Amino acid sequence: MSAATLAMTHAGYVAAGWGATFLLVGGYAVSLVLRGRKLSRQVPPEDRRWS
Amino acid sequence: MWRDALLVAGRDLRIEARSRVATSQVAPFALLVLVLFAFALDPDTGVLESATPGLFWVAVLFSGLLALSRSAALDESDGVRDALRLSGLEPGGIFLGKAAAVAVQLLALQAVLAAGVIVLYGAEPSGVALLALTCVTGTAAVAATGTLYGALVSGLRVRETLLPLLLLPTLAPVLIGATRAFEAALGGDTLTRGWAWCGLLLFFAVLYTLAGALAYGVLLEGS
Amino acid sequence: MTANPPDVTPDIPAHTGSRASRILGVAALAAIVLATLYGLVWSPADVEMGDSVRLMYVHVPTAVFCYVGCFITTLASGMWLWKRTPGWDVLAGAGAELGLVFVLLALATGSLWGRPTWGTYWTWDARLTSTALLAVLLVGYLALRRLDLDPTVRSARVPVLGLLLVPNVVIVSRSVEWWRSLHQRATVTTLDPQIDGDLLVALMTGFLAVGLAFAWLLLHRFRVGWLEYQAQRIDLDEAVAARRAEAARRTGASAAAPAATSPEPAEAVGS
Image 1 (cartoon, chains in turn purple, blue, red):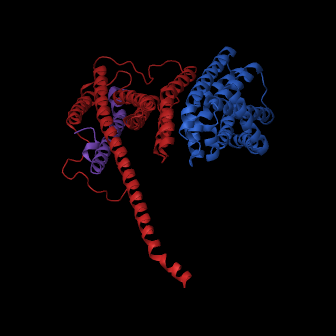
Image 2 (cartoon, rainbow over the protein chains, first blue to last red; image 1 turned 90 degrees about the horizontal axis):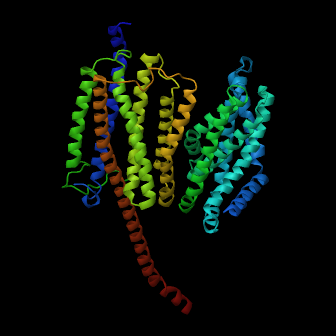
Image 3 (cartoon, helix red, strand yellow; image 1 turned 135 degrees about the horizontal axis):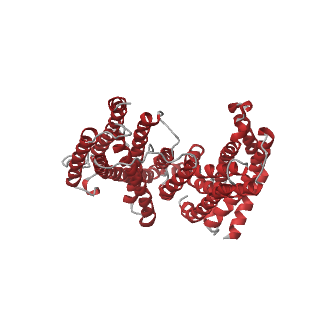
């Protein structure tokens, strides 16, 4: 197979892999930040260990 | 500690002897698994014969789960847990005793399953020494690991579903090793390699026996 | 948990961020951009593998950091058993959850790499198989954590299982490797390709990006876990206080009632 053909057939898999990574990690990060905000409202600041 | 172990083992086995669940339910289940494999894998294609070691040990694991679940259930009621904690028995001894009792049941199950594969799958035993030692070390590995994990899920409502999820991935090396050793004994591989796999089983058994004996104290306290 | 918990901190910014985490976040984002550029654009395709090697730049780091997460869980579980400070338990949970996210990514990218390379999405290659088992081990550990257990029970069982995580991973992967090595000759197209030159740079940037992202996520996951622990403690304190107030009210009421009713029977008897 020529280099060009190889590149074409793999593009989909590379895109899927990188895309899934960004989606999963990004989604997880967003959910963490949102959970953190919701919980922060219930816990007084002296019980945290950061500013 | 060894006396405590004998005491607990005796008590667990006595309860089993009186209720006869292992003989009347677990053993038939083990044979049933062998029969189900025949339904699934079509006895005419020769798959059953070549897969016998694996099918044997999968049946051991499934029926072993039942035996281990029962062993954990024996100590679930509040009275028994407190009694064990306050009894002055060494936790390590309790662990060894329970594991030993399960091991006895597992060995009996394997005898039944051996008869099963000989009759149902036409297996022809060879390399019997390797087969026997694999059964012993494999049993020790499953009994020790299973008793420890049984204590992790004892008393929980989800015990029946959580125990397999936690235990089976942990026992994957035992399944791999025991199956390869059996295959070697039955002629599919060199005996040397078979003994090497048996060695892995022994290592696994020793490791989890130590781990269980050490951890049982902590687990008993937190009951 | 109540449906609309009261806002205890109306004046203070309510989030798990801090100066340190923001710096870390910016660094992570920069590294991600760099890794994406190197991995997808600036580095050439591999001579043998083609463009699919670009998946390795994600697959290898995520697999490595999954192991890091497991290691954190086991270490923290041991420390929790030793020191009994709740932060260790929170850390153990955070490590495992991150481990699960990263192992799922490792499996997905490994599988997607396998399709153009071997023609199938799955082979029983040693690395892929033991990674799959690792995922199940993590699922099991997190399942135990999620149960609503009595605190004494929980504080014994969860760390014991956590301690066993790394030994399990090691034994399982060694056994699977030994088993599969009997069947597979070493080929170039394993999941451990020989990478050098520009490709190595791309891999290194991948490691940097994944590593910084892991650190940022771990920090926030730990803080979220810490807040959950505090919120639970507050709920518990409130519940105990409410029950005590209830009991006090009842004893106060029953102390008043007999005084009101007792004169009557005496009079009835007397008359």
